[in-house]
Image 1 (cartoon, rainbow, N blue to C red):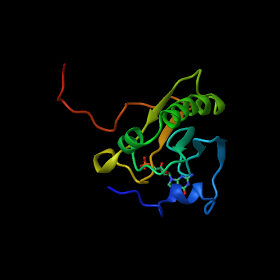
Image 2 (cartoon, protein in one colour):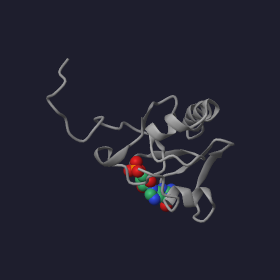
Image 3 (spheres, rainbow, N blue to C red):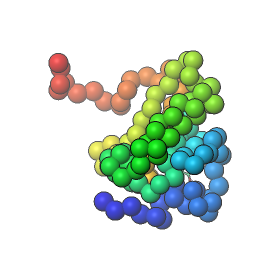
Image 4 (cartoon, protein in one colour):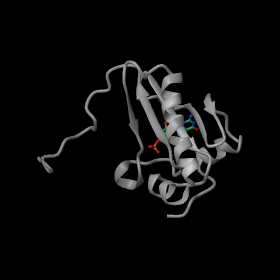
Length: 126
Ligand code: 5GP
């Protein structure tokens, strides 16, 4: 899969579409999800052009990967979910339900989030 620079997060990074920015530095932009799936729902995206987690860790510099990981923790604290707990989600590809093909991590919190996924499977019992 090649990176599509017309995706919505690329357009947000270029300033073509507005967002509610939470945090920005050399490596990331963090903003609120337009359709919140939890009382607090933030997105953290790298500034580099990577379509998913695999592409990011294969192609980004160590500094960019460290900066991204640290920014997630910083943003979680900024939106007030560190103490109560939260969930990080990085959907990838069709089975992961990824809608926007620019790598991003969801930070969900602000209340109990329920089961990890919508349905359960009886595979992998140990
Ligand atoms: P995915 O399914 O790709 O992991 O998640 C994409 C997320 O981007 C969804 O939760 C969706 O609500 C969010 N989203 C899509 N378009 C926009 C937008 O224009 N602005 C913001 N802030 N979020 C968006």
